[in-house]
Length: 114
Length: 112
Picture 1 (spheres, each protein chain N blue to C red):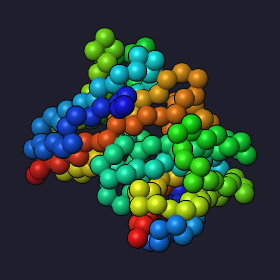
Picture 2 (cartoon, rainbow over the protein chains, first blue to last red; picture 1 turned 120 degrees about the vertical axis):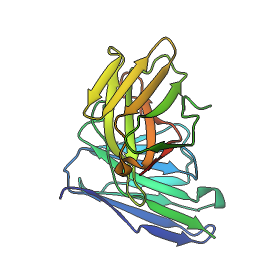
Picture 3 (cartoon, helix red, strand yellow; picture 1 turned 90 degrees about the vertical axis):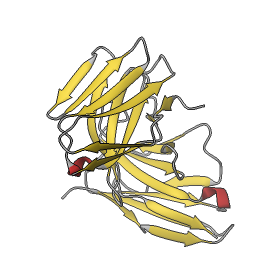
Picture 4 (cartoon, rainbow over the protein chains, first blue to last red; picture 1 turned 90 degrees about the horizontal axis):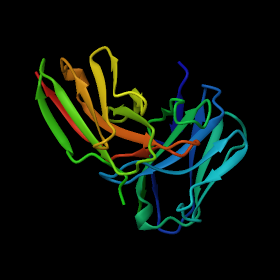
């Protein structure tokens, strides 16, 4: 089945220790998104790639970076995680970056920062 | 400042009855609205959407109503089934490919 896969499902890191979260897709979609969802909060878009073009949201901290080496994979790098970065990180894909194009979400990676 | 608000964190409904989930928004530029459904340990999945040129969209047991003057939309599920128990997110977007803005979600429990 075509799908969006996130690894790992649970990630524990230490305060200040860099961490990378992974997302892959078999849908061959052009757009890949990263969302942050804190407990009992709404998912919040951090950034997205449209093909190789990177689009950062204005209020995304510099601590968060992303890489998309090819169509299938996208990575979220947190350079120096703080306690406030503990959250569920959701990856999503769509064919085009339009609101009418359905976004398909992965199951998420829950990040714990000790 | 929340632009999309789901004021009920949770809702319990008996099987067979109607479930009504509500969503309010503040940005008058929003022109497209969506509902996503999320089961535990899974990502949100698209359920139904509505454009601002319509006031109703129906898909099987699911109907979304949009009241632009009140900046309010609702999702009706009739009849509710235990498998509908999930967290429902309302989302909205403005024109020109602006990002989706999500609400905090409402947890629906359908009791058999």
